[in-house]
Image (cartoon, rainbow, N blue to C red; front, side):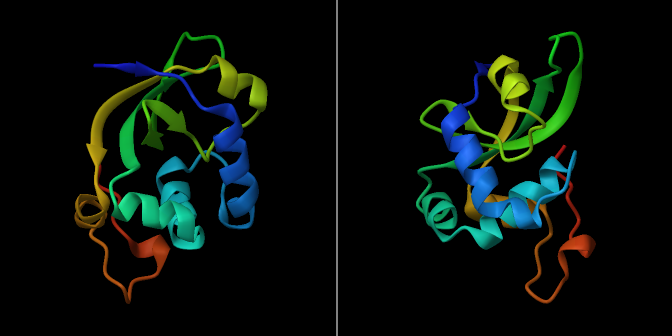
Length: 124
């Protein structure tokens, strides 16, 4: 398993663009919301320039792990779900699995007529 660090500036930029749809501690739903409300990100995912990753992240003191969902671009993490810039700079991300656009839609059992709260996030 490979360990990644976050691209702080891209993570902050994405969070600021999509903050109205994001919820604290809901990384799987936040990745979905970021894709649905950011056309540039969706296009990059469609062309496989960016991937969705499922894995773990360390806590701010690197002592524990949290299951987490985030984006990978150029071997860097873009994390839309973070609590502070300081913790984002310290975190390490371990990738368990990555998804392309179509695999992601299959993994969440996406149906266009389903509201987001009914989508089944079954990544791991």
